[in-house]
Image (cartoon, rainbow, N blue to C red; front, side, top):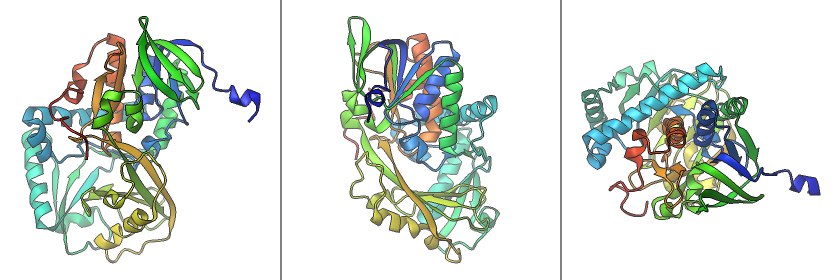
Length: 399
């Protein structure tokens, strides 16, 4: 590396608003801050989309990592309803962004299907549909004989039926992050890559950042680094477990899956979708990852082999082409499987969010918008209150 290359990450020394992290959460926060005329500086250690935002399946739909029954039991009926509504708001925000900025992110409005395996799961799915409908979130119950509407190959005998969410979407997540980065820049945001933020503190009335390129002072900040948050917000250290999600892609095949689909083949859940060009992408089997609690973003042989067995186990007559690509991404888990968001303790005018628990695209735009609003207004938005660091369900280390 030359002298000039080593100095390519030059920082301005001070800024009014700094966003740390270039995933969908950070980029969307920067976008709305820039739209408000605040000219934020976004710092990203790699390139935008380096983490889970550029490594997921691109599902954008309502729902949580918890089932709705579990959410009601954990949070109470009113809180569960509010949190679920926030994921519906996220779908609307993504749709609005794509339309407003004319973003080509391969958006599909085919909805999402969730399969039930065996009678126990099927009974739970039906109960979930009843609860959702009672709270104003109607979901379609799909009987086993109706699955052919969504799946163009026979299903295994243990597939009992499914739930369908017609208002869900799917996207190319990397294209969305990239396009939103450019849109934020057009509105006045400054984007700097290759800059790692090592600490954040409040000193002499300003926020002080130590970075790999030198110190930086700002008036307000957003921390949006997900699984890497404990390094900057140590109060989250016992509440966040990094997790490696693994996926693979098959070569193009004839159309089989007409909507993005999920099923709990394992306790951690599996998911897949077929793209417009025929490629099928599949992820899951985190239960087999020995290095599960890691920010490493490299696939492992055991998990990849198990992921290859997901579709054959559910669709015995499916003729799959060869695997062409394998990858992994680091996400963050929390004890109650909900994001954590709010003010950074001991650092006034700094805000953070993390822990989408594998449902990142279900929360990221919503959380980015709320964090931008927090910076603009100078206080906690009501939308963030269900995700606060002091909520009673965050009462122990994540598992």
